[in-house]
Length: 391
Ligand code: EPS
Image (tube, rainbow, N blue to C red; front, top):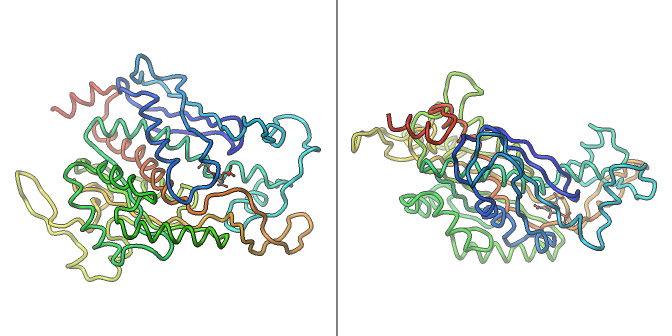
């Protein structure tokens, strides 16, 4: 399974193509809309989410509600482009010389503004802003929803929650979170997101939810922004997905790329992750037991991967998102034309996108896991995979 997206943040629409999805998977636009709607909710978002109502329209690869095995193409309009007072058709016109459009020449540190100029030799930062924008994650979520449906068909569930926003988070980022999350896993990892979605910041703890909201209000008033930490858990993965034989076949490496390849994500850990570096071996590794006819681990500090291969325990991925670089209170930058020092300019933006980004983190790992599953069990259709699993 692989997918591509195209589209600018304020262009007419986002386009996605996902291919390699086996034939016979039931999928509807409404199922895709579920995660798209989740991605649009969350405290700390900016004004744009009030009017974007993301819905992906499938235009190929699905017949009578089931995948055919052909590439699945999807489109999603950007309402920002279509609004009556919208200037975007002019700003992003395909033709003409842009004489009637004011160029943007003040790069925001932390956004891909200056790097875009340096790489593509733009004399107007606009194209860098448009394509590097997290708007694109809407189509990633749409494409990944199909991979999520595939995984769910085989009992594999994904669910995430926020563990920290700025200085507010669990005191013991590993233990406190395990106490809360592990009891939920019996019913599958989707229980996590269904519970977390009830919190406006997608945090499982009520007190922390309140403190996170207060902090977002405070930073919004100050014209600042916030990032934070998150965790995603996957249940139902069989042992033996991935491989240790080459670096690029290690499942942990592939998952890390999917995460770090997502806007504003700055770090990823598997299981106990960085905490492992502070502990000695006996309290890092998971003792092996044999129970109910199968090998298990007494604990799951390794987060479900050993040697880049799934152990059959829940997969635990944790990550960090940096604060959004677009801030009302300016910081120093330099105009790309005059080379003079100036303040950053403000574009409408979220204050804290983490409650929404958790849905993106859940999503982008789905195609990676679906590929590992297909590599092991193969099959061009759901029926064929089911036969292979039965053998
Ligand atoms: C973004 C800026 C904001 C966000 C956008 C990402 O958009 P706008 O400039 O139109 O207010 O809302 O995210 C989305 C539109 C989305 O769907 O996630 C940025 O600069 O990266």
